[in-house]
Image 1: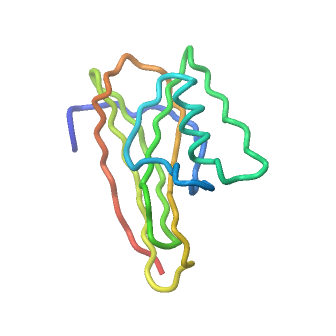
Image 2: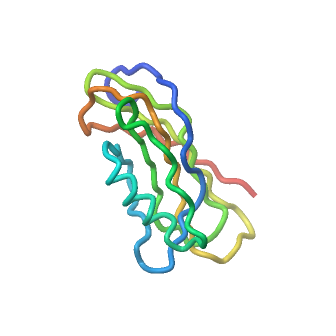
Length: 139
């Protein structure tokens, strides 16, 4: 176990895939706890600025939900992905278990920015985040 004890909570996926941008405003790599609509809209706009028509921002009930977002950052080819498998909450902290898949062999020659964002029930937690990341490769 990584970090203090935590209990798994339900979550729903808001975005799973690669960010698309037409400028240099790709999402920064990291694990983020998004607490406000303004921050979510900003991160969503950054992730989808290269898509036309622009996709609608996934709805979040800010009175009862938060967003957990894991962005891998710049990857040199296609074939990379990330999936949040579990979100757990302990006393004042959040633990995220995720799976990163890396390509092996032939891939598309395009820079990618894998992201997974999920909505979770709101909890009284700090920005104390723990990431447990499992990494695999596939052909």
